[in-house]
Image 1 (cartoon, rainbow, N blue to C red):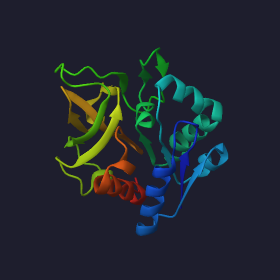
Image 2: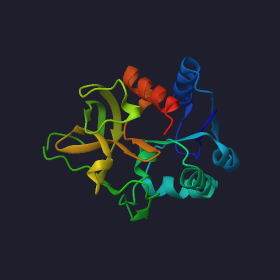
Image 3: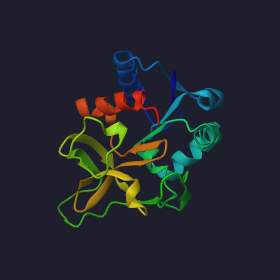
Image 4: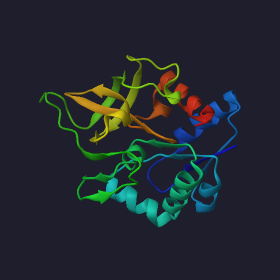
Length: 211
């Protein structure tokens, strides 16, 4: 069982790699590798797409790497379990509107736009710990409850067109999508590797998930 974490020059992956490897050891979840190789991604048993930075730059870097086509083939043809983190979650949307309109993967029915809190005192980026509000049950959320904390750092959010694909949200001057899920695809707006026991539990759940 191989989990491929895609490295497309979108940030430091060290902490994510360590968290996934730890939970793979503890749960018998197989091997976890960080890779830039499209063939490794195409043949992986599960795929993780992290990301820090702007939506257009991340989308362009992913396409340049050759991993874009590889993960599309894996998910759309072989139904490989897929986890997007932070901007990696946002790239699941149909389109992003950060700086310029940019097409995403289109696996989640939503669009990415700047956070606009209703309370002027709330700053953007949305940064720090926030309480999850569970909207829909999902295997990756087993053992996770409303009120559990996760760690966020982002200025843009996914506005959902299909509410059934939003598994959880947080309150930050209005609803902010925190978790999306559809078929074999899950996205986390927060960083699970920085979210203590809550994040580690979700990583373990993903590694055990057999959709």
